[in-house]
Image 1 (cartoon, rainbow, N blue to C red):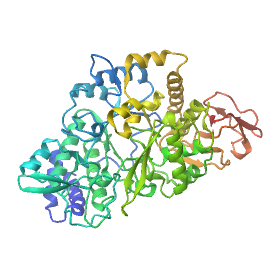
Image 2 (image 1 turned 135 degrees about the horizontal axis):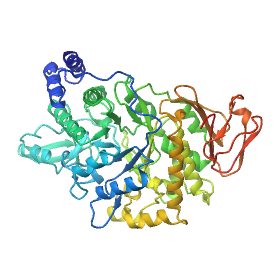
Image 3 (image 1 turned 180 degrees about the horizontal axis):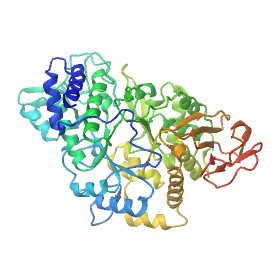
Length: 576
């Protein structure tokens, strides 16, 4: 079996490194990964998740306590408040870093001392399924590897991608407006390094197989510390070729397949997630043929859902949902509506018109948000993402401005997200109903800081104990919805999903369990007015008893109607 695995890897490596002895390289990769003579990949189309899985997204230091390392504080909060609510935790980069709140890594194999230690990470991994970032596209300009690059010594001398200012790089697609090439003085004279994101984040050179070997060693180390879910950060930009857009290249896809094969052969329960914040059709390609990413982010969901709830019109959200292919067994979507980043606009390409995008941007700015821009291939700037806390993004409507439905609109957004096909992931500041953090924004000068607040634990627990606090109300309602969701087979990430046609103010879809023994009709009023829904339009089976899982109310008359308050959601189920 080991020879068969090595041969398979060698064939895949030939796509990436046609001039290398790929049989030898495959053997090196297997040895680095620690794959023994009996190593074999798990069966195809195996689901490593079910309806009980819910992820929390947080920084190591999103919650702080004086005199205590943040990872200890995080573990305390998770254990005391969320142990029965979430099953997994995505701790955003917890390594030593020089910029970008962790995404400019200086040392992949160390825990930032100000956050805690590997022992703290392992303690959390022992209680929750741990997701960590593999910041694979770029590394800090202050890292040891990059210092070695300047000195022209190993390891690092050939680890970073270089460009030539004389080349035509106009086709390169990237999410920033900063210069793509940065001049660097080395022992060999001036060189120009490729910086997709910033001059402090220098792109790694995967054309050098030694870089791949380094990252396989890093992955094995993370597995040893309890990491089970790997988020491949900015992976779409991994491979570069002058004269191409340098995004989604064939070699990038093949490298992800190689990493998946190695990871799941070592640890069959491990999961690869690709972070590719791009238009929807491009994003879907990262599933491969159920042999690439196990999970992809549903990047179109946040902007479309926010657009739906602030306009009171679900036409675009419904059109998108109808177009989404069901994920094959062994793959699924990661559903989220907020994260540490802003709300991306590229995933709305082909879904919202330019005018509708601009109207959404204008509304978010009116609600206190900021907008960052990207450089297009034509040299122009376009809005790239909206930086705003989700709670404030839903504080009103585009037409009427802020109103008194903010909490209901916010809970409705999560009721929709929690019911969709896929695994739900909630950002810590959504769980807590945190608003825009203007003080942090002013302090850092970075737009994304508006949604990266830090709570003091004592103040947070006081808010969660205060009956008049919206933070408490959000926390209670979201935990209750999650508790209901986790007990429903029809909410399995791979259960059937079908979009309903109930008008533009009612967003509805049907879920059916894999064993076809439970149906749930998810009906959501996405407007600020009371709405009626005829039950005959939903087509409930007459021989079953139907009940709303959220309110507990039974459906007595199938020929009657549902009366939905503004932003009310119902989960009509024939069991539970």
